[in-house]
Image (cartoon, rainbow, N blue to C red; front, side, top):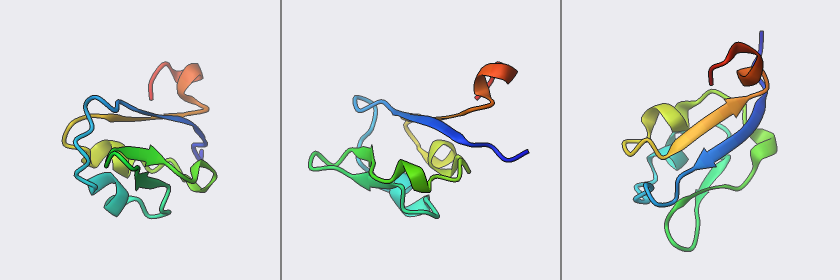
Length: 74
């Protein structure tokens, strides 16, 4: 079953602005904002692959999908 994006949560306090998540996103969903922190620019393009979440060295990104609530996990 395909997962559909519900939301991204980015902890701005933990993000150091390394840009790994931006570079890894296959759909250019994320950008670095004016403070060089990760931000969601195009959430409608997200395919919920979680590459941003998996590659963030600071664990600053969480991706939640519509099936998250029913399964009790991300």
